[in-house]
Length: 172
Image (tube, rainbow, N blue to C red; front, side, top):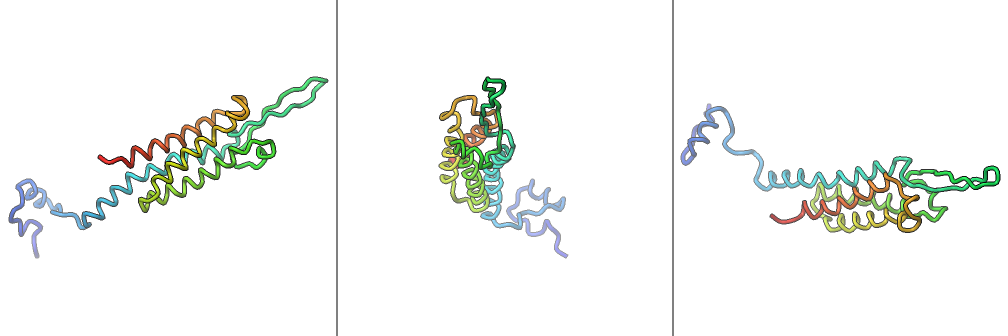
């Protein structure tokens, strides 16, 4: 039986001590595969912000609509909230949230492709910036009373994704 510390010509004393404890001298994986595993772990964070935005968009308090009710001769305003995926706000000309929701789904799909294949980084940047701009449409079209805190968090998550694309992809 061959001992793990045989054939140690040119091996450093520190490596010899590790080999004597039963550690392998070299990994079984090729260097390219180890590098790819490290890059895949680094790219895994690209899925977090779109996933967070998607969870926030599924909440029933993201889109705000105001309706007037006639009560005793006076109009009383009532606030109603909807999910970003609800089709109701489109009927009241608030189309930005639904487009943002579907753009976020597409962004999550492209982020998953980037996680596993390493392709599509600039598509992620364009989709995240476009989605962040679309999520601001209720604020720009109707004012602050039609924009919720959840909508603000969605905008921040999508904008953070655009910044993260730059951070993860830059050369060192």
